[in-house]
Image (cartoon, rainbow over all chains, first blue to last red; front, side, top):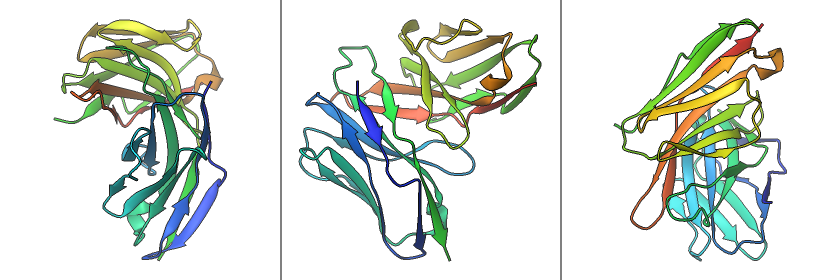
Length: 119
Length: 115
């Protein structure tokens, strides 16, 4: 079974600064997807960024980028120029690519990191 | 329309009540999900429907009964719940694109309190 570990229960950052959230995972599969989701106080789960394991290039989405180290099974999220609206709980998640045809696989979440942004 | 709509947003029920949660999407997605989330914890998968058929049941107690009447609608019927079932219930939907890339869209959830 796959597991996802976020070792930082809480992180804080000053507005306009950069912060990195850590995530490690354990899997015996070679093809999979990794995600970072943001859950603000409204509790809506919002996809921040995704990474396909077969891609060596790290994904970026505006101020959000990842450092994907497949051999180390590490998938960290870097938030640049932090804004007050970035304050939320962030979840790292894993999904197998072997869902098979039209069947859909299970998303496994880490325990989450609460990010506080100070003005 | 890129929304997953869940109703009601809040629900309070007694342990002997029967209630239902509703989830709707009009994106043409053929997979729909129910997740349960306790406060400050990650979502836990309950059920997956693929093409209106139940494909995954994560050993959920029978007091939770899912139903997928059509490709746009997903219900979760609740009966004889326990106080520990109080949680946020999230619905999600997804569809693979041509490259088999799948994106999950979440609703904003139903906050359930069982008294």
